[in-house]
Length: 198
Image (tube, rainbow, N blue to C red; front, side, top):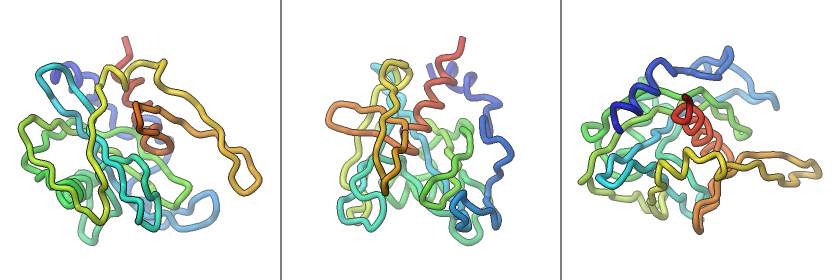
């Protein structure tokens, strides 16, 4: 399974990113703010009964994105010149998984967010056993979604929300009690498209 996923992801760096580059040096978002560069790790857990995708639920007390489902990741730090470096550092800080435990595979398409970030998703394998140590100030819980569930088109949908008097469509992928939406759902949808290609 691991070799098959690696083959599918080979050569997919910046897929669907148009002319967007990472880092987003001085570029502006659609609402005119300077974009900040960020990266996330898309952790594929290689379990004996099937591969899963590891996700986190953010704490309810954060000033932004409180309670949302996300990948481990965050804003680039000074001196970091690749999204892999940022994603691995943030993963270690947020859930305690060291860089040495991650087998990097590749990248998905760079994504801009409505909150002023340009995010590079980095895909990597995690092989159990590994310890999770949640950073309590950022992460409320960690859970896994079967990759088969992620790759089933029936589990992806478009929802609509009224924000400041305007209807906005966004991608969603509910899973059990978890409502996965926004950037995380967009990244999972791209992953499902790549792995579902014939």
